[in-house]
Every structure is written in structure tokens, then in C-alpha cells.
Length: 157
Image 1 (cartoon, rainbow, N blue to C red):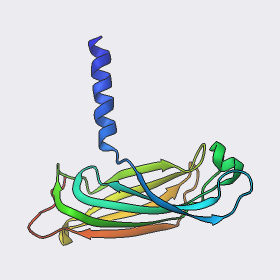
Image 2: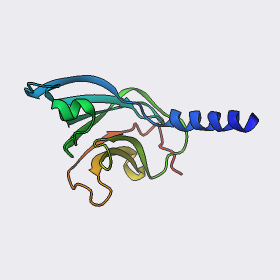
Image 3: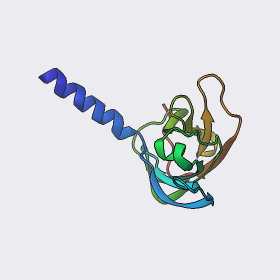
């Protein structure tokens, strides 16, 4: 019983570190007679280890019957903009590079990823979004940066 409680607590802590996307809105890009239309979706998520930074990611979402059933493969294209939305505070030392968000784009192999990198020399957080496949990733990517006030030093692991 204690082992089960410990495992559940550990799993809950691990999930708490992962950023959760919140849909800000979407626009239709193509009408589909059956099923939802093709869309561009804009999601926002707060960096789980950096208070005061929110990233906005736009991406294509395939509609139609296959999209409604979850079988469609969304395009490997995304855009990202991260902004300071409040006072920046960093909860713990950050690794030089860390995946902060990942979402499945196809039923099996494709994922959209957001990686945070620390540019300690310039006291800046750099966010990169890209997609990958099990065998071969996409070179399509987007990047944004959030300069942190020099009074708040970014602690690096």
C-alpha cells in the first residue's frame, strides 16, 4: 500500500512539471462538409519552472473525419512567441537545455516539441519549437527569446 502511494505521488510530481496547454483560440482555414474544419489553433502555456513567462504556439490542426477521430496527421509547422507576463522568478536551477512541452501530432510517431535553452551570457531564455518523427524529424522550426532583467540572474545546473 505504501509503495502504491509513493508511486502515485511521484507520478503526480512528474506531471506537475510538464506545462499544460490552454487553447486561446482558433481560426478556420478550410471548410469540411463532414467533420470539423481545418484550423490554425493558438495555445498558451506557462513555463513550468519560470514564473512570469508564457509561450504561445500556433499550429495547424487537420479537420474532417480523420481529424475528428484522431487519425489525421497534423502538419509539422508551428510558430512560437514567448513573453514576460509578470515578474520573472525561477523556481530552481535550470538545465542549459530542457524540453518544457510536447504534444502528439499523429496517432503514432509525430510530436510537437518546445525546448527551453538558457543563454547565460546574455541572461536570456530561448525557446525553440519543432516537430519530430520516430525516423526523421522536420527541419521546420521557430524560435523566440525572453530577455531576463539583469537583476534576476538565471541559475543554471
